[in-house]
Length: 271
Image (tube, rainbow, N blue to C red):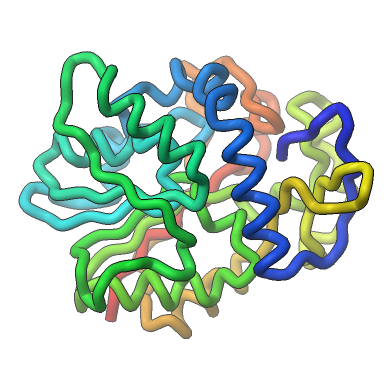
């Protein structure tokens, strides 16, 4: 979770409209700085599933991509989408933030070695501008899911645009981490709140207007949302922290990664 020097931090309710407006504005403003800070770790045309540093060419969770029609939601600058394109898929990248889409379009022009430009669409993941059954695969790596108030609606929308038998894979903060402080050091090893407390994390400006919102669901919540949307959970990956990665990213760190998972990756099929 980010924390501005001037932010008021609380746990309070935040509905879909407030959440979307806050996160759209936050990512619009932070797109350039986010890329400057994390671009080296993420690469310009690489596929990293989370702060642990595991890549799709290692985990192979998307399956064979050659000739597939693929959608990335919450794509940011489209690094993962470029990797998917290079693997032979026809890919479209989407993001809520115009700032992130601009960052992605800039990378289309400057990525080295030159790659096929990835098409982008700015849209909310709960209102995708695509026809039913348009894609063989939908994925997101830490995009969209934690930043949406109504994730049950997001799952239904993903299921709608997937063809029968299509695959949906998403990574997000492991629900277990919600009960611990967002601290990469020893302070982040002490449980401070209930795992079952689903009250959103909200940063607000001096007027109390939300500027950033994250939402929590338990593992059971996620499974029920997926099943209700007509998706079948076929794998739940809890990647261990690899010895090769000694860097911290926010609250993720080698110290904490040695004790409990920081990321959950859900692998699903459309019924």
